[in-house]
Image (tube, rainbow, N blue to C red):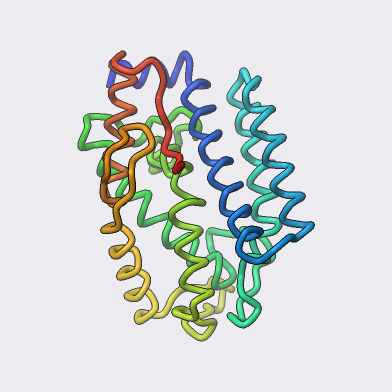
Length: 247
């Protein structure tokens, strides 16, 4: 943990940059998959082009604020077209990311899955001896597991967003599966929450070849594997932190 605190204070940029590069690559691939499956779309292609520019800019980013700015711009471009990935038959619409509280079904689903994965990552970080609250990209804030939020960036598009898109586009979750509170906050009904948990558990049992380890692993082990790789980097066993990015 001493190495973690030192790097967080003195030189967080290389780790933050690697994490955000993986996040933007994964976001780009979600959009490219849509074009591949459903044909050319000018708005989505424009977002892909913008993400390519973000990746180029990121290579020269030498400060945390620069990295965060590039990440913010890339996220805005990605979520600017995310609604176009939803099937018209689904009955869902998406006008951009909102949270605390989420104000529509898509945002409620995204926030719910992010929160579950974030807790998994926090547990994995503690398991390898790292402090989940001291991050490299996200600023330390009381009550926030900043390092877990850092690692979560690698999994948002590839794992969480694609799971949400799949549940909506296959009609497994419908607009009537949500409750709107008087405050405008939207949340999942109990049955839909159970279905989402089951889908997430099924996803965790799927196997992939880990791009860095080059071994077949269960998706559910990814938070632990990335925590372990980060710990190895901080101990000096790995020259760089290898973020998770599916081939």
